[in-house]
Image (cartoon, rainbow, N blue to C red; front, side):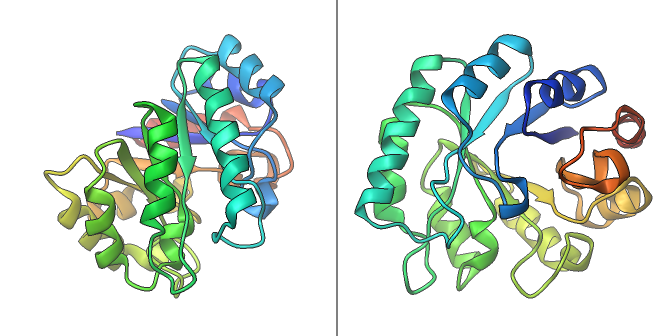
Length: 228
């Protein structure tokens, strides 16, 4: 079972590694759903921890649709991240009709030069998740899809039926379903039993007081780790 934890600072990343995270998603703008962190933070986190780090590539929080200048910014960020070395990426993009923007996706994957990728919760805004899954399966660099089960549910526990289906449909492909949003220690065991997911993603639930703007709480993180 893989446990991914959001980090927004170097100290977050160090605490996450020390108390049980298998992988870090490095972001800024946690209340906006995650934005691209600074190059200095990316470099510092890579130097501070030994576990895998996936870096968010998202230039703004307005939507998951990107114009030409946004795409250029994302390409620049990916090239900088690639030069740091030893990192992976988190990104997602949609067309105006709600389908995966596969044209932009291919451009960014090419720039990523083999780095593994999580397609983030833009997946919960697609017009058809099953169609989107088939599109993403065409790209072996994409190893994870982060989802709570769709736009019509508030949390992963609410989206268990859809997440279980996505887990079944992704079997045998390069993609694993990474369940996130609304998970906590109280619901985790039942959630895993009912969905069969092997990867989970935690943010606010492992922070002090469950507050996204507070540091990671070692006790909360250890409690989740013990359940896995």
